[in-house]
Amino acid sequence: MGAALRYLGTVGSTQDEVRAWADDPHAPAPHGAAVVAERQTQGRGRRGRAWATMHGTLAFSVLLRQGPGGAPLTLPELGLLPLAAGVAVQRAAGVGGLKWPNDLLTGDGRKLAGILLEADLRGEEARRAVLGIGLNVSAAPDGAAHLREFAPDLTRAGVLGAVLRELHTWLSAPPDEVLRAWRAANLTLGRPVRVQTPAGPLEGVATDLDARGSLLVQTPGGLHTVSAGDVQLIGQ
Ligand code: BTN
Image (cartoon, protein in one colour):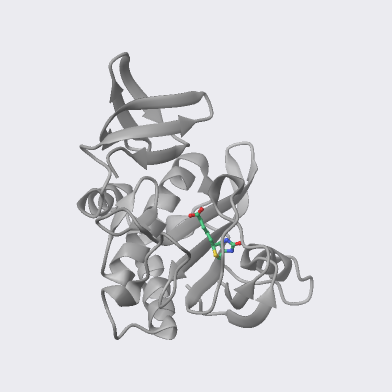
């Protein structure tokens, strides 16, 4: 990942910069191309939230034109990609743990990094997907944390290189390995959670992941399978 890399100054969102490069009729961005920006004016997070990009943070997006092993980007695999990306970021950072699906948090629940996967779906298959990663390296918005609190020698360039290398490994890893690595790095399973799902709020205990990477939540009313939603760890 990142064999083709563009380093830009101020942009709206690196997600849109990668798309524009992918659509360039003369030199379209290849699979794995990455755009890094110094500053984003319209950085976006999951569920329509804004994402602040300030001095000391790292913001980049990677173009995915194929799934593991060159396979098409189809729906079951697309469910696991955000988890695989979370594992890659956690391994590269070497600190923190994962809140489902892929927020990197400190043990006391402060956010170190966020991941956004935007797939251009047509039916069960995506023509392409854009994976956006925002990491607080040496600065963080209020209430969040940065990696240098835990690893004072980290640099933005070093973190970027490490994440791109780990993405290369984890985006093509077999599903059972991704699930095993995610479970080993997780801060979610066994915990009481509140989940905002498209079908409404849910409260229970996060028990496990299924083979597609969905979160299983045990509530007094039964076991729920959550494939999309926002998880809050209760008691933090
Ligand atoms: C989240 O936790 O909600 C996901 C945050 C993703 C932020 C990154 S920064 C680089 C890329 N460009 C964006 O506009 N968003 C992602």
